[in-house]
Length: 289
Image (cartoon, rainbow, N blue to C red; front, side, top):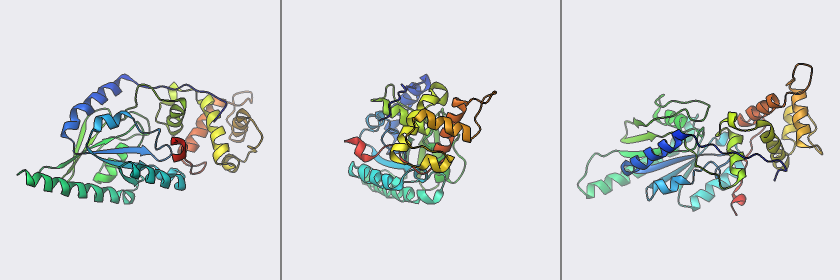
């Protein structure tokens, strides 16, 4: 636990509208496909989704696993599998990693056909709602899955704003939904985690304070990652001194030569989010107990 604090909450009005849309569309849905970020597979789950999904079939896609600690990811796959989710780890930018998703949906499609046939219903598609928090990779997953650029994508939270149905040739339809958070986080660490991965708009958080929390976490769980990346001594130093040293090493200076802490914090977050500091996870299954 870091000695530093940063209170974070972000729930813009369009998210309320998006939630209502999901609640209205769920009656048409057979399967809810939920994407979470492999670096924070618990914090990146919107707890409201369970209530919206009800008794629908559930598929959990642990995305961005190419940026996460592989051992920790394996534990999360086992954890969610034990909760009844069909769980797959993917990199939504790599179509090879989503082959298993095809297999799962094909299995569910055949199951639906059998059920419909018993009721005298024919040729109904398997309808899937793709859900997740902002910036978790939903639209990129759909583009890879469908094999074409059929959904808007971007690296800022909140790019997908409206309702988008994508019809595939194999009897599957996907509903891409806007990324939504929930009105209040259970604890401050959830907010930190979501800010770490960029699911909360950088403009509404204090990046300098958050960078100190991030530095403390990395030093505690992945010692020497910062030293190796930036060529600094991270041991026995306060987080603010580590941030200062990174700023000096990377030339993040103001006119006159003083360190620009905001610029340094942005550089650190860009590097961490891009996996350039090292592959790391910010929460473990053990944190759930």
